[in-house]
Length: 337
Image (cartoon, rainbow, N blue to C red; front, side, top):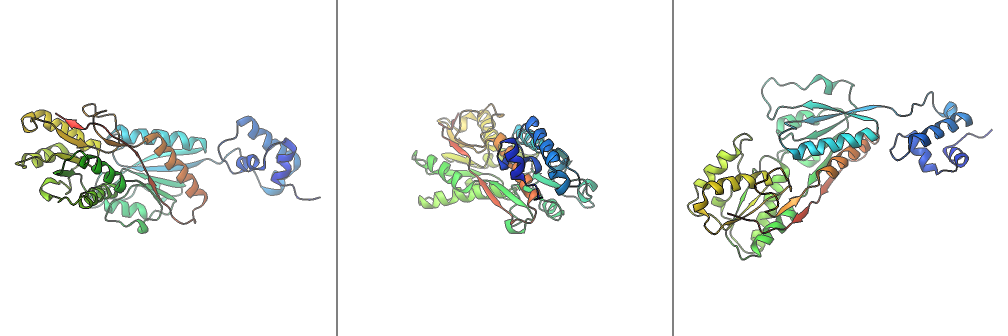
């Protein structure tokens, strides 16, 4: 008697072989009723007995979300919620593992990450080079959303997803220059995240291509304390005797601090000032719908991260991937008063 195959099961049920394959590989897209029918037919034909010691409806797995300050903004919580929803379709549990925002002497990795409890890890909102280096050594499939400039992409032992910043900020800067504005500054900590650095590089290239000088005095790019953004931005703006025509910001988070500052110092911008952002976050009501920004679809990003870690767990030896997510640019008036 010939060996029973997935095609035999598919033919017996009048369905595709792909559907049968999905059932036995725990993939989404098959209804519970059809899944049960496939398993019953497999038992009836002897496929399970001949090919598996035992088959469960799905093998439960656990992925660790290695994250720092997940509740710091709705940007992160939206990504996480959608990620958890998507992973549940693959019968994968999402488990929080909290990281400090900065490495301190004596820090040790949580034991849950070094045992055999988790089958994969997604790294989110961790921007400390020493912490990233420790996470990078974990012997589990990993997916990183962004990283730090100090660690080269090829040193990461996992897949890397980046929000595209270089060409996006180039185009945003070009939209500012097209209005006849020539004196433009940039605000964003380029040491904090690789995406921030690439956004600054896109800004610089656009200025150079338009034969405009980049005035370092108008650019705040050094390290900014995560709990002192407004204070440091205010000090920087206070130090400028003459403000530029516009500020290109690395994020909406930064742009909303500029709006707060200028609302308190309206006399400095009698004719207003152009400010742009990045992220498309709606949590900053003082700039929502007013400035040019890059709209990051956080729900789709969360789903994309989930799909990537599932792939990485199924194919741990596949070449690591670098993926750029291109946000849609939303052009607006961008003049703050």
